[in-house]
Image (cartoon, rainbow, N blue to C red; front, side, top):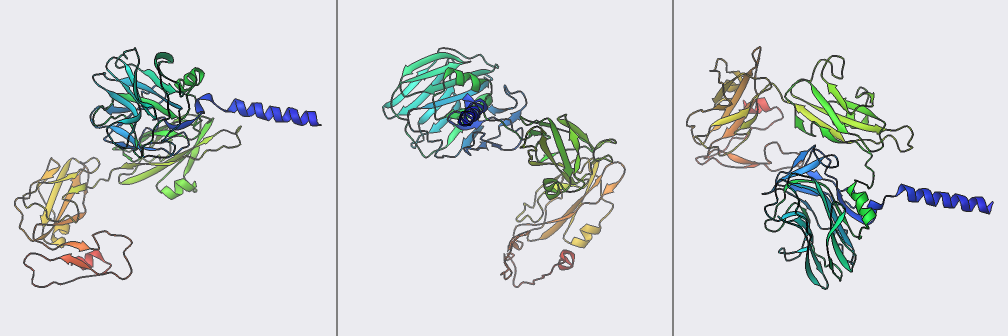
Length: 476
């Protein structure tokens, strides 16, 4: 009996070892850069070091390991706020990343922890025109280590640094490319980790993929595992296309996504309510499939009559593998919007104040709109009921010089070649008119007992107040 128990314990121990991955050891930041949409690069290490977008990095499909992020070399980077796990301390560190630079004209920073002085680094990995460079700030002093290889532009290369308390080594494509004897514990700071930016310059120009930070000195075998994409599995679907929140100017769409690491098939949910799709309510499940693409809005497919303009659609992918007890893995709810047939995004915006009397009015045209007719006046009813205006072929309108100290209304109707779609009536004020309402226009969660206030018109001697729950009645 005891021998069988020992054998069982040994079997569990061996199985546990087989499930771990050498690329996981000491991993405190892992930015896979596979999201494909949004303005956050999520940390897959489990440490919660998600990085926000600064500037406008662009998601691309052409990464080395799935997706990647493209940086413009001028203003784009990622920032992960300071955390205990990013303050490595100690005398162990590794940084690794796949890089693809459009050129290497200057210092292209890959990852950098900023010192408290903001002018130097705690740890840093970057690409120079002729080498890979590493900077470490330890209790024994500051050191710079250079490799010997000049990276080719527009080609993927894997670069890394490891520090074990005695030596720092630079690797290019898994091979040692430079080393130096280094001692001491890494210093710490309260500042963020940046991916793709130095200080003040040194922005990365090109693509980055699978950026990793460890509080452990990787062995060469561990480094090779990381280079090949080894690490914690990612069971949920990701990289939605169209991107989450995208606008689709069509009545059909092709949905696609990156499969979770364990998925054998995919449960697909689609609907017009976030809560319904999130809860898997009746009518939102459209089927299970093995493909990672799905056409929506054609006969024979979900929503066969076509997507409806002016509607936001929500969708979710649950990853399924009947052989895994953790299945299914519920996915995030993503959305896309089909624009309305009416005009939207007016400028001046609805409720705008102090509008320039010489402003040119603009808007976003409704779905399929060919011609646009604008109306303006100081009477809500007159503008709402107006007809017979002059059609415009552009998305702009010059109303001429407007009178000051006025509340004015405007509307744009859209003609799509078959039908005219009457627009909403928007309002604005010119300088000198009553303004600055408190609570603000459209305010929510207002207290049950509230004091109304406003900025008086320049020439006002008294004020007449209208109040109610019917906007049209109050307006009239």
